[in-house]
Image 1 (tube, rainbow, N blue to C red):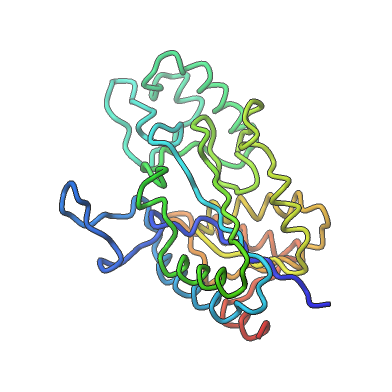
Image 2 (cartoon, rainbow, N blue to C red):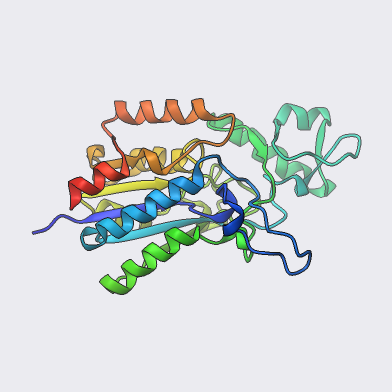
Length: 284
């Protein structure tokens, strides 16, 4: 019986890609080229390599799942939610801690949101994975930036038509009260929102595969968080069947060490690393 191969692509979206001018449409309201909100150096080339990999291995890929970072404009991890204690706006890429909130250095724009915000920051920091970051507004639902990189979208579209299988799309991040780096679970799950809790359906789907190939952006954040949760919760274990295609992911600027330490931890757990070209040669 042929082995099953599941390709998991984490957040291959325009807002995360350092797209050249030719890939950027004109905004009909301003006449200017649309700019990615949170471009990661190297991501465009990552996605082009990934597209070539999909085309090269299409006959042997059993499943493809694409996760989609999906945010509202107002989100606890966007500057639109916050103001400085003196009333000034908060700049993108500002980390915010519970201690700063208690000291009044930063506050929610809506005073009524203060208790819930403080509870969130306390819980987030207690979990020890991340400090809250006010990222630029990105992957806003309904925008060009939310769309999948066109080369990747075209490649998996060809796979769908040739194989007559549907690429599964998994949105994450629509709850504005919690960060949701991982495709499998929000950083602080909301008891009233199943979308933020452990995605057992996705876990079970991945667990049925003999080989789980992973690519996407960013290696320092959403790929990292997803694979960490996958390693922790994959029902069937056997982490050696997970392969990180390291030439199809890049870190956010300033967070290269986070990606490097993540990769080392995964190697220690038995997760494999391969380039997309080596993996394609092995599969075809």
